[in-house]
Image (cartoon, rainbow, N blue to C red; front, side, top):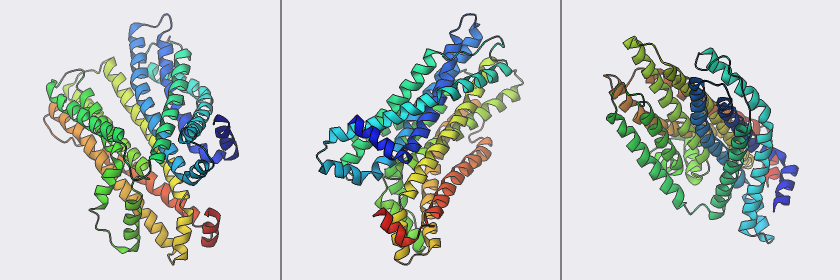
Length: 436
């Protein structure tokens, strides 16, 4: 089935553009940071520089792996769901479920390979720029030269291919399972992440205020809690919809649409939860730590500078990835509804009412994602603040939280409304006929 996969890509390349972009960015980030391993392994690199480079590669490389999987999974899930009729036709033509899985996985691997190969050049330049940042801040000696070697290439290409193949397999398996059945593995992983995250944030109280590893338990706990919430996105959305007292035609239709297809916007909700929790928790914890160090009048060590650089870098990576994931998922999901928009207009709805419905749906998703993301973030921020300072809720969280929410709302509402407005330019009769 690999030959049909290549033909599918060749005849409809636009369908795989979102997956290609996710694989490209993921491979570029992974290779950029793992090139620090190649750089640290060179002869003549001092121990302090090597430790800084290896820490950066290990921490951000691990985040990159998770982000690549979520980014590719979100785009592939939308892609597979939109191809339900095509896959059903192949089944009627004699294709077995195993053959369909091999075809979809083959498409994802081929696209990921192209994306990873295209990312080598940008990753090389990115690695040089990253090394310059560490050298300018005094964390790495100026005599260290950048090296882009086998570790960067093997991890970047290998992780991207494995993440793409795994995400494609899960997407087509979920689609074949049908909307009425829920995956037991997903439920198990969600509860495991929630329990582990709770244990991690609770262990913060076992550390002293000046312990070197104090920031790790609350940060990792908040991340694990956000992953657990993200895996439970369809259930969380259904719970929120049951408690929404929206009135008016647009509000009623938005709630009804989301309730009927609660599993479809799960990728968007997952991205929002992860972005809100990780960005808010990481930036706030780092801000509280920096303020505490300045209040004590202590000169920051190289390790403190390295940790701060990593935190800001991780948040920057997450912002870029989530924006790409949200834009890809929202554009694909909204553009796919052109026939639905045409039917609504033929039934008497105005273009403004359709846009109002899309806006209400997106607003509900944004509020839900931000709400549970903030819950996960505060679960890590509050224990850290209580141990590190005399307070409970730091003042830094208000400004940081507002900025994170503003970015999330701008990306989701902007993409959805702009895409819907573009789809509405097609005449209603033409939209229904073209999508039939």
